[in-house]
Amino acid sequence: MNTQEMMRILDSIARDRNIDRQLLIDDLEQAMVSAARKYFGTIDTEEFTCTIDQVTGEFHLKRHGEPLDLPPDDFGRIAAQTFKQVMIQKFRDNERNSILDEFSKRIGEIVTGTAQRYEGGALVVTIDRAESFMPRSEQIPGEQFNAGERVRCIILDVREQGSQVKIVVSRAHPDLIKRLFEVEVPEVAERIIELKVLAREAGYRTKIAVSSIDSRVDAVGACVGVRGSRIKNIVDELNGEKIDIVRWNESSQILIQNALKPAEIQEVNLCFELGRATVVVRDDQLSLAIGKRGQNVRLAARLTGWDIDILTPEEFNKGLETLAETLLPIEGVQETMLDRLAALGMVSVFDIEEVGVEVLMNELEVDEATANRIVEVSAEKAKIVAEQQQKEKEEAALRRQEEEAAGEALLGDPLGGSDDGSDEQADAAAALILGEEPTENATQSESTDG
Image (cartoon, rainbow, N blue to C red; front, side, top):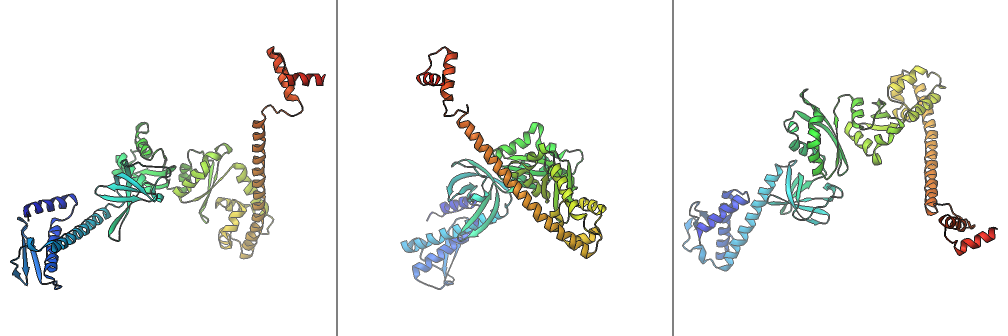
């Protein structure tokens, strides 16, 4: 047995696999004990002991505390196979534990790996010496990697699964954006700029609210960089995902206005009882505030923590008028109460129905009977309004269908031709203008008309 070569291999494994050298030596000693027990056919676990010289690599095997005269080389093939199997299993266990310890400390860290293959929709990524996988739910929609391509992701979870270590990585998690900003924006890494809150729809759009602890540092400008250089690197890494950086503000009204940018906001009404913000925008800003498929307002709601309703001035005023028409006839309800409700963000009969009796009693200082009547009347009116809105919605949808059908018909017959011979007349007229002989059909048409 070449003990020197064995120790060199042992050192190489310890270095490459990040395993404690002493653990590997202990494994060899246990493997040698197993081989001796196999050779002598004993089941006594205490009968044999083994130590390895740390320098020379020589085995010192003892039986019942006495040195064994038989050298390990004479144990035979079966015992050698046992030694090999035990040693391999021990080494694998050590490597698994090493990977588990190392990557458990790196959860949330941004790493760069290499794409290997797809297995059942999950992407297998090699990170350092370990294999990780990215479930479909943690991938950016529409993004595909070829084998050998670089993959930048964060370590999401590390856990034991059977005899293996399962490392889960992600590119869709919001924390990836935070880590990328820490890499690209030194002020974020140094905690001068704080990413207060983040809302993300992976692959499409992200909104981030930022603030600075140093008044001399512009949080938004520092994150964007000169001519957008910093944000461009992050957008490129995410394959074109849009990133909106907004200024954080402790005032919910101002934060909501910032979060809905680039739309211009006219008014924000907050209803703390319902956690709802009613935002008024001009007609030409409505689609911009809502965003494609509602994405802008949806991300703004997640960023601010408020449910956001977007209304035009006409819709907003109509809601207030309906509320006034519904409540003023009630005995004990005054104009000042309506103003109070509007100040509290309750701007429609739907809001009154939701807040309930107790809130109305406290805020409007009315008795329980009046509050119950207000809620009851509002609920009845809310049903009528809801039916009207549904009917208007259906009528609008029907009009769109009719317009689309008319447009298709126009495209199918752009000259509005008919089957009454006008097409032939048009051909004949065109031929005369061009100085050509009329076609046979056109000639017949003219003679018939004459």
